[in-house]
Image (cartoon, rainbow, N blue to C red):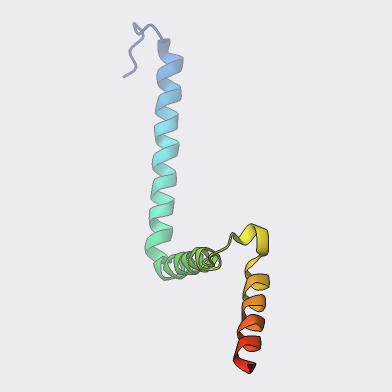
Amino acid sequence: MLNTNDKFGTTHQSILFYCHVLWYSFYLVFKRLILRYWLFFFKFLLIISDVFVLKIQSCHCNYPCHKYGRDNYHSKKTLVTQKRTKY
């Protein structure tokens, strides 16, 4: 039962009670969705992790990528190595 002698009154406790009820209902719904569609969630997480890994690997050059750009740097590098191999 709600305690009416509390300094916050019953309004504060009823708000807390409804927040807990809402949170628990969301928890049950998401738990059921995850149990039912765990394979789709797993594939989605794999796709997201692949995107982050590719983004991290795209800036592995020695020079800052924001200055030269990855594609610019690598195209210049291949041109330089092609010129060197000709001689």
